Image 1 (cartoon, each protein chain N blue to C red):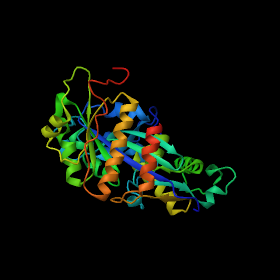
Image 2: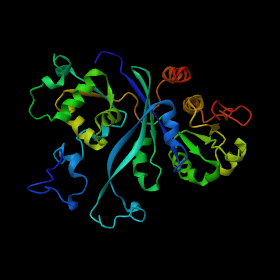
Image 3: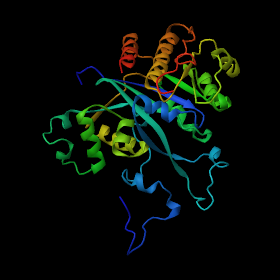
Image 4: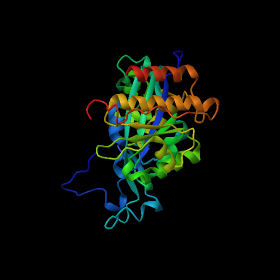
Length: 204
Length: 137
């Protein structure tokens, strides 16, 4: 191979069930389901109803997968992490080599994203917390969200609309900038909100 | 890859689990010899024996290769493909793609390029380009 090596980068999109991960990935890329066959773990037992299929040892896990071709040799991949706790064994592989992560939060169910925040904090993976502004959900200032989640000052908190391409692009730019910043020092500043009540993006 | 539903009956049963169908393509192997190199975004690039074939991968006479091997090789001939691209493109589970790519790698038909090792960031220039590229989308 004499041609310059192509570069592939990945960003993870995590968050609780229904936080908008699929919508987020679909807003900027053609979304495709990625199938993996995985062993059922002990953790799956209480949740998966396996009655009648007691011998079932594997399960198909589908993840959202999006590809953004910036140029033919520079591709950014988005992976929506499986929303349920019992598929966490997949995360370690997903997280390995990731440029960074987005944790999508729904302010009506903020606790749903605790697990994702914990996961990335423990592994030192730079992440951006993106509050998905659902219609009808109360808006909270960034600082309130930061406090509620006890986030490090270096973690960017942005508001976004997962349906809006421009808004999702802004979140991804924040993730990449955060990765750049985390390289030199641990310094990072909260980015301006990607959307807010005063400047609603088109389509609200 | 479907079992005949009539006549002799099903050749698999529930105890065999859902693993039977996809992993039949890998002759039952679930772990690739090159597992640690085949990250989801590891790029599979066609190598010399393939690139010099006029008719693409389906011109190969290697009888050890399955149709799925050839499909992977043909996609890689067109442009570098990540493991995840191949899985979605061919509608195969990731584990199956890993095993098949491992075979192609061992036989020298493809290279696997892993540009950015885990725990290392791409260089500043690449990150700047990604930011500019995202803004221009």
